[in-house]
Image (tube, rainbow over the protein chains, first blue to last red):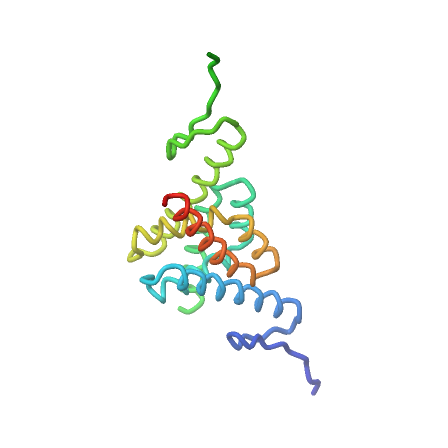
Length: 95
Length: 95
């Protein structure tokens, strides 16, 4: 049988058959971690779990956030809809 | 004496002699308000003041955030330094 090269993202252990996808995922997690660190450094009384979730929320939806920053602030609220859709998709797949 | 056209941002009442600056400020506050609304919709138990501050933090430093999103996640931590510098500048000017 053949052996297939895989790429493991050491931040969360997720595996990828495509190096570029693995690097993209790693960069997304780095952005999330940095946002979380920024929030915890800036707000002493922020809830740790919320700071983590906010980091992931913005990192996972960074394209939409970038468009909102560039001049369409109303797009920020799309992130809420996208994230709700992600969650229901996760729930469906775990049933 | 002459009368001078001024532009008032109705979100926070701040005044500008330059229309473009007033519009830029309004857009920044709209981005901040939308980020705050997103956080409050997504996290039931988030502290209202923190949600507001996070909205303003990201909106005020949106250029740095945009660069971080584009591929330099380490820049997120610069926002903390920029914001600390803003605060000490505010404190100096209010002494």
